[in-house]
Image 1 (cartoon, rainbow, N blue to C red):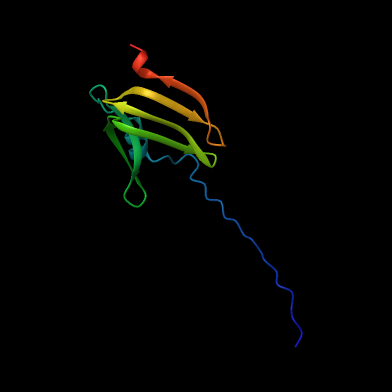
Image 2: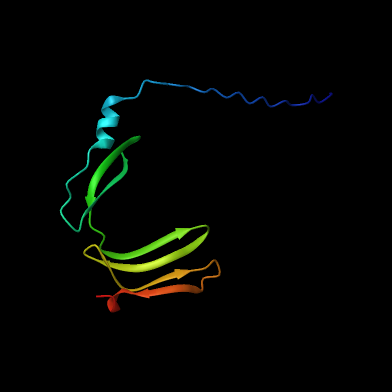
Length: 104
């Protein structure tokens, strides 16, 4: 039995709702929550495909991961950076440090 070559055809479909912006969505994203300090308003995913806007206060440990490694570690206390904050290079070594307990 002879094998036949397999051809892969990729078809892309571009949909354009050009000029048909969703006014309800635009109104939602234009709304600014009046969050009491030190809270800040943030948009986050909600449900299967929705978005929510919430007031948040950063409190507790903070770790940021990007480019394949932890890049930043620190601590928040009621929305403010406190104590040592350390930035790390790809090798895991500290490349920068700021001690916020000394910044008053």
